[in-house]
Image (cartoon, rainbow, N blue to C red; front, side):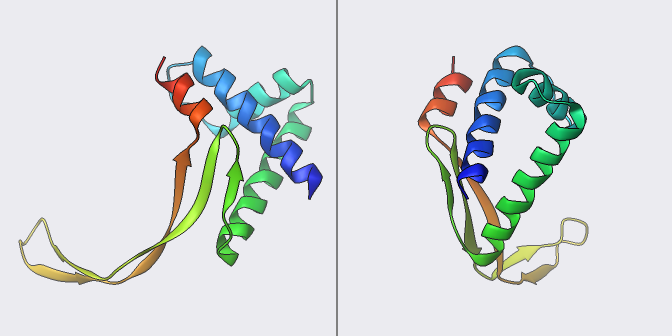
Length: 116
């Protein structure tokens, strides 16, 4: 578990640093390359580390857990209730089912970096 948190903080630091350097959309391959470069890992190791991070976040959210990375942000699951919607093509009212959604709330440090 300690290793997971170390990986999470490493990714958080790299993502915050990368936000300052790039203003375009970053895909997975570019993120893996940035992680490998900053953490002095091979791209294969960085890819496995990123996959481990995303898999563990997914598993925790599936169980209903909340993942908090101080300064970076928190991942959680929220329940969205059933509601009435409208089909934009026909204008007809439709019923949208209740569901669970994954949420991310940016932490203080990430918000400061993004708003510079």
